[in-house]
Length: 253
Image (tube, rainbow, N blue to C red; front, top):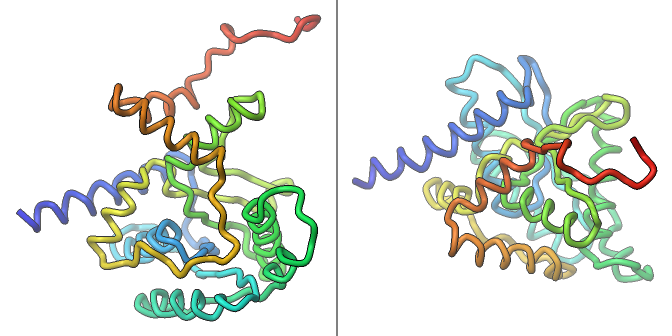
């Protein structure tokens, strides 16, 4: 029974990730991919799945696990934590050193620390990719992240949009991919438990819960209690937009 359960979790995770990769043509033979490791379970699970599946797929690619260090006191612990996980698969962690931690405490911030931290970390990653001439970066955003983002944009930004599983930037010079786009957070937690990957990561001293995202997460849970298929329904709506039934701005054809 335990073996069947392991096969079920691993098989479901691999199938959904493989389908996302194929549906959005995320990888090609000979690719070099930066895998952005934050220290959390999602990006670590992504790295683990992408690296271990290489043994039995016909496509060959090279992974380069990368972590953006904030440069504050807890960074060493997060880096040491990630180095151990990466070394277990025979690879070496690359660390981008920054002063983001200092900037978060010394600058006047217009948004939450997490908003600025994410923006600065992404810029550091993009600059690193450009210097290293790597054209693809894999992020660990999963389906729940996409759904919550869609609802946040709908309720707070007056548009219906989300993070795309594959997105080209800078006139195609850089491509972001999100191979976990078809996986829910519950799938990732199950996979981490199966593979003995840490679910809890060293805490970030600047982390603050996004109130809006938390509200969307709670809303999804309440809706799911009434309709277990609500996540599937909202996700499918993201590519099933009926433009002919949307409002047009006054004065436009």
